[in-house]
Figure 1 (cartoon, rainbow, N blue to C red):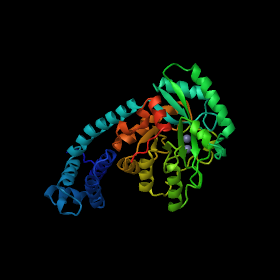
Figure 2 (cartoon, protein in one colour):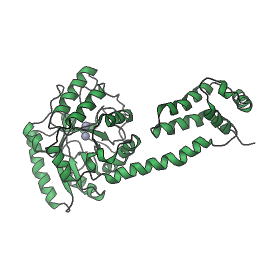
Figure 3 (cartoon, rainbow, N blue to C red):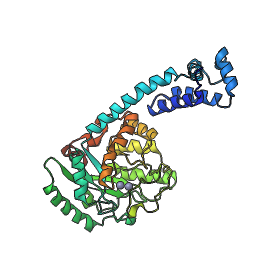
Figure 4 (cartoon, rainbow, N blue to C red):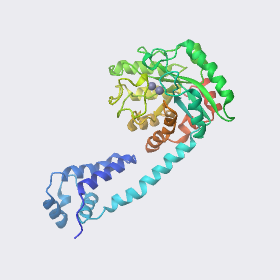
Length: 360
Ligand SMILES: [Zn+2]
Ligand SMILES: [Zn+2]
């Protein structure tokens, strides 16, 4: 007799794969409920009920889930699970790969001018090797002192420096100027307006007061999103799902290491509606410890009609290759390439940031 598998584990695995594939909630729930209904049952009773066909008499167990259980108990991988493993993964991989291939640049990166670990030149060369056509340099703004945020004076010097570096880089590639500007407590942006207007791309993020109450945080974000200088709303919820990966060091990392952080509380539908109205892109931050926004919010931003930017928020050259993580999550949520601003050429991107037409 074949050795029995764990039918509860198989049901949970199926639910997991359905969730990962962004399948309808009711389909997932069928497997989760069945797993829950059977979890406390002894192996003997489970086998007896599977044998005499009375599993479906239990609340939460249907024909499909009962069949899976019977197959598991017989030592076979349930047919449902086998099909899911054989089909879902490959389709999804193909979609994520296609999305990654469509990306022509990265709109959120840091150098050693703020809390990154490497000079601008090295970040640029790594981007060239990855096949990018452009890299937007977005070092921090003055208020983020722990990350050595750039004063107006230092940012002006950086702009001159970038112009020099660009002149020496291979043709067909360029560094675009930018900033990751702090969204201050009142929703204003932490840099001079004339400088923000000069930059190619402005990413704005909340880095302080992340536990502010819902209405306050919502007001703050709405005001920032409505600011015509803001092109991309960075790591929207501020969450940290795991400790920082090894090798990420710098003054800005102090206090963040080995710690998770809950999402900020704000009215996501209001913020995404404003992003759609003002044509401000929502960032899909690829950092493994951020994975921000969570998938349920990516789906809501998609429904709201928002554009996206799939960014690495790289603080080191190797991290520029993290875009695939963001692509995977975007693909899971059904984000099409034509909604992603970094599938555009540098010219298209800059034309958009400098002259974003309000979409009514
Ligand atoms: Zn940030
Ligand atoms: Zn950043």
